[in-house]
Length: 115
Figure 1 (tube, rainbow, N blue to C red):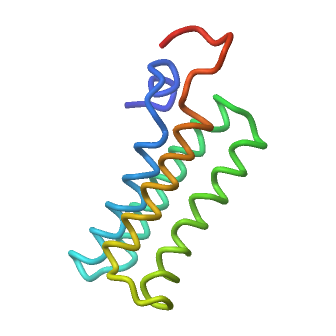
Figure 2: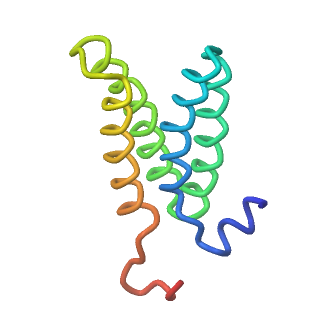
């Protein structure tokens, strides 16, 4: 599915955030190849970033990109620093980041055409 199709169909970028964080971790853990999980994280983040830029502009795109990377870092802090189980840490930050992303980038706003 091309980016223009995703923009036109209003594919929720929050799904890409969830895939990047959760599936990226799952791939890294499942394969033992951290770089492969990082690639999933990066590709999903770039796709989401393209949607944010087209839909909400550069300011929102930068803020959501910072949230996405911050969630990745926070998952590590919660797992390594605080001692939460890794999947719990990833799940918590994924839910939070995807929820904020949906509200900021994907939810309809007054005056926007219905999806």
